[in-house]
Image (tube, rainbow, N blue to C red; front, side):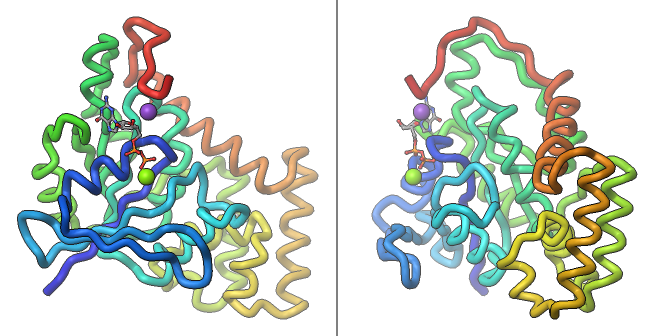
Length: 267
Ligand code: GDP
Ligand code: MG
Ligand code: K
């Protein structure tokens, strides 16, 4: 039995540093099919039945950049056994925007809170237990650069077996999502149903094509989006972005206290 774990996260969150620490020289570098985006896979140094894929750095699972399309197609179609979501702990709020989307894919996910050495240096305080509770996913604090807690992280990722819990949107949005879920056959039974239904609400044409929606179904979706637009005075992508940030602000609010400001790893 082999086990495949995808490393996903924002650019500069430390994915490649972690990937190198996990795989050492057991790496294979190629390209993603049909595109010139580098694909790195490798075996765990300590157990060759565990495989890692270093996904391109992304801020969102939108269909707009090559990196986003490569990452989401891989996660939806290749169905890795688990995701390690690498998060820059010195920049949690921004990083969690992607996290809220990854958690909708229905793939067991552990959050690697990376750069904890920087957090300690900055004297920031992170209430990890609270974050874990509010996000509904397992968190392991690591430093990829200093090789801290890496094996614990892999053990957690291998032990995961459950789909992540789902964050809720406002009642109005949830009602629109339910309408769409009832409308598209086969959606409810897909493990990634939460992700897919949100993308259909956003009128994501790649997902509409994937479900081979006919003209009538596309018109129904458009009508739902128009009603949402009228109700929230925003297009459906904007509505979802706002709702994600509302959730993130509530989650991070009580859990992160900044110490010294102005120290960042990225500059
Ligand atoms: P990627 O874009 O997600 O693949 O990020 P990289 O692995 O290339 O890392 C981006 C930068 O962050 C590099 O300069 C790394 O050395 C640094 N970095 C990665 N992990 C850590 C960490 O745990 N602590 C510190 N201080 N720096 C890190
Ligand atoms: Mg990288
Ligand atoms: K950095």
